[in-house]
Length: 192
Image: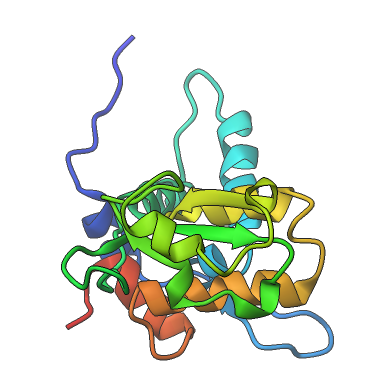
């Protein structure tokens, strides 16, 4: 049995296939691109890929949307934030902490660089004074897998809480505003 190998990179696939838009509902709500949905509902995007993966037969071919979803999800895990650590000002942020006791305060100061953890370095500065107890704090890498994980946790039990996390990701990935265009440009490598 021979298998085709696709030598194109994820960025090349995303550029080639362009921004995929998910249709609007009967109320005429604005259509969202899959790249934007990586911020708003990453669980849905992963679910769409899983559905397609489960339908592929032994001799089945992947269609355009299937290829796009795979490339988008792989690219999402390779993207790195573009903001500097608010504590050392030298390294790029890589982590954020979530304290379910103080959602209103979730912001850039809840992030830190790779030299941080909850146990030392910038991480200790990040949580000092912000949390009543270490028991309520979770640390995550600033990756889209963390958004999916948070969607499935009890912590994201309201739309408001998830919106605060999305805003943190917009800041970390240097998006002035989350639009179909800005999200697509981030994933396709077309940002200046």
